[in-house]
Length: 459
Image (cartoon, rainbow, N blue to C red; front, side, top):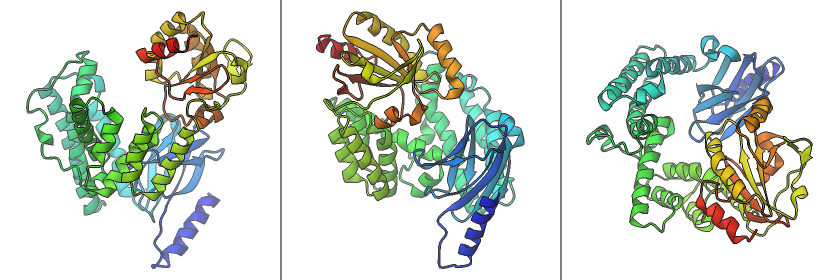
């Protein structure tokens, strides 16, 4: 609390000098019954821009935020809270971690807006109901369902007092974009839930999206749903580019499509949003980095991507691999990368909560069986947190996982994970018998290229 009072005093002094613009907001609060040691606050404008806040023993916290946005998402374990915090404002949030929805209370300089956001989340969840059930509906019933969500949210914002007309105008557009996002997602979600991957919506189903302006900067800064629609439209255009020229990789095609935008602000955001993760996965690093660096004018973002580029270059084929040391071995004891010298090492970085990771297990088992008598060690490194330790042990038994099953020493923050710049899983790495990198981003087990790669090594 003393920390928050001090922060409040600072902002008060600054506000007495009108010539100085406050470039941060204040956030404080208390979360009861939480097992978390820290909170993560993400910028809604770009999820990769985030700040971690340490919790006191009693669950209280206080800090400043300056992530270049008015809209944030506060994450505590699996609890997520959307927050409106323009620079110069302050907010206090309290809740019980075990029953957040019924105990959350928000006060501060934008109390009306933040409580509207809180109520909107509850309303949307109630109106949406079961996601599978909603997206499994036929087109007419689905549209009727999402229109009810749209109307319910519009009624809520229009009947909430204390909210500025500027925010209300932007929010009404955001609600419309959310409705359009539902329509845009219907094809993929309906196909998934009904197990009909060939499903195509009828002609005219997406007529409401016709004429969508994808370069409205104000809407882009405010609305996550609008940003999703813009990204989706650009993905569609890049897919058309790939169909015309199959020699262009999908990630390169997407970057090239972004560069055609007139709005530099939107262009910068989309380039960085893709590059902060995409640059670690691309198979054409030089082309990818060249397109990004020639078209982004955001110096802060560019410095981050430049650092990632240099890190990736250090992970080129033939360079010494980063090492892990004394990772817990499910079979007993510990294991280090140096223990495996003399063999090729294929590493699967995964976690029990990762759906795509689990989906690779059957293919991994097949590859392990095919190369079981060859000079290669298959190593799975879990980045599960401490709370999922027993789940990890159980999954190894239940799914009869083979190879070396290791647990990273500090989940995402393990030095080995950080040194490889891993930001998404599953991730696969191939190392030679001398401990040098063959591929820092090796083919996954379900990709036929993996078997081809291993056969070429004459194991």
